[in-house]
Amino acid sequence: MPEGDTIHRAAAALRTALTGRPTTRFDAPRLYGPHPGTGRTIERVQSHGKHMEIFWDDGIVLHTHMRMNGSWHLYRAGERWRKPDHQMRVAIEVPDWVAVCFNAPVVETYREFDRFRHPGFGRLGPDLCTAQERELLECARRIHEYADPAAAVSEVLLDQHVACGVGNVYRSEVLWACEISPFAEVGTLEAADCVQLINAAARMLRANLQHAYRVTQAEIPGGLAVYGRNGQRCARCGDTVLVRRVGEHARTLYWCPGCQRRHEPLAQVPTEPPQRAMDPHPAAVQYMADLPWRRDSLAG
Image (cartoon, rainbow, N blue to C red):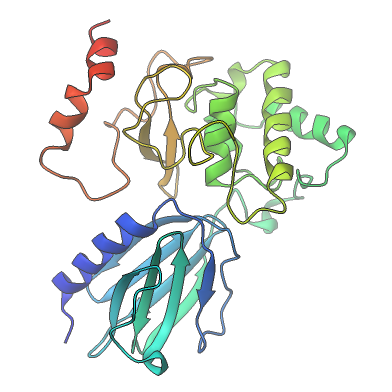
């Protein structure tokens, strides 16, 4: 019978294997709710007692309750399952891993409420995957004339009333490509900056329309410049990529503090220390401090 500590350990394993990876298959034969789309990225995994929740970047949340007999298993791709197929309630495949939920009596999905994405809060912006040049300029104008000039540009890029299509992965990648601080207040951006952001977002989205795996920087191993690369060297400047949960829904944001300095506020908001996307380890802080390129940058 699973207890809270069992589910907590399962969540830690799933978090390490799934977070930041695109979904290649989602199978839930008894589920009648919305399904995350192929290629959508898993943003976070969390547990509460016997409850487990998995969040995707399109706002879909999978909720499972283990009760007496449910369990989550994690397998390498191609590894034989330890329980029979007919007990499977959910199977989630990402590159290299398969997460399987067996015998959970409660399996449901719902859409996370997000004021930046909810269609009830005004007319949605153009779809960057198909927008014409005139519409792209309109999207740039909406950023430049944003109602809240103090809003962080990383949050404004998620506002579907500015433009549709940008999710958590692309906002991190677009801001890196444009060398703009994710914490820049949108009111400090020049019109040219807004055009650059929209054009970069549209270019990345359209380049990946036919691909299951997102590639924003083909010359970088893995295809992504900063997303999911916390603790690794930036391919452009060599500084260390950081991650932090920001915004109303605490979505993970990746950026390079070394080269994303344009329009950087004097005091970055929020001021909490950067967080890791996976479970912390006692040696993590010392490890990050001892990275040679971090020592150099911190020494000024």
